[in-house]
Image (cartoon, rainbow, N blue to C red):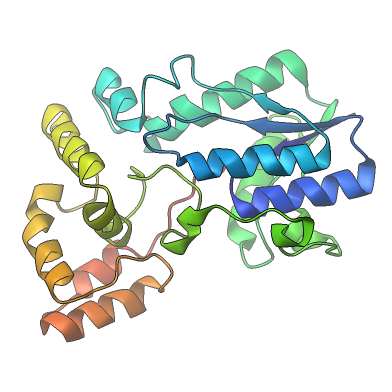
Length: 270
């Protein structure tokens, strides 16, 4: 039986890797990662992945898009001329993560021969139910150590590995310029990565559809500029309602639309 850890490069997935190795050893554990273009996956995330894997004594197994090193999420959706496919599945996540993941499973860990591990915690019951249901339909058992196991580690600092510096502003170690994220995330991008902001605007123009429901990025620039001049901190660490309430106070303007738009979080999971 293989124990496949969905090793995203985020802090939670690293903790899961440590918990799994401590419980079952290293012999059948796979740290499965999808390498992402360095323009949108920070080098410090890549450093973090390597250091945790080295500590655990395991290689990183990559199941990546064939052109991961030349195409970021904007290039992928431009090539497909769409942001979403089917019933609304984000095309970037499907092409860069889900499809390579499923292809790797098919060739290396058929149903009945693997347990798949995720870094969802006890507060993420809806995500656990959804993911476990999807994998069960594919014939796989899934486990969620941070939610269901007695914990033996709560920070990678306990094993001498600093979490990625990107957590200073972002909540997750996902792509910067996430095409499933809301206005708060994109305000951080506007302030910190003008190169990606411009590429995202150009991508909207090419595809003819907006990344954020209800607004094109160029329509948000004036407000984001006012927010920056008013000293609104570019961060994801405030709850969306709190963040936008502070924006409303600083700008003396209504923010109900932003609160509603940011109610659903980004859910890249593989």
